[in-house]
Image (cartoon, rainbow, N blue to C red; front, side, top):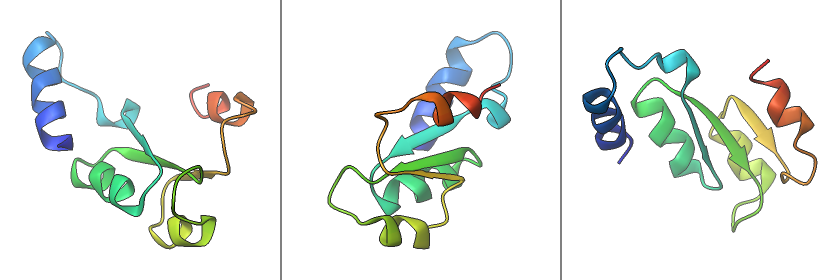
Length: 78
């Protein structure tokens, strides 16, 4: 899915997609793998069926318990 989304974005934009600015956000280890498949960074959030430990084992670039405080997430883009 990530490869298709990236191809769609690249087809619609006049400039190449800068993968250093692409983040895949999800609540499963598969979401982390999805980001890795296109060389994007990933944020795993432990709001679904997977524990923080399970998500950490997938080695996301950032791991959040939830997004109740958006400041740590927003700081990643500054």
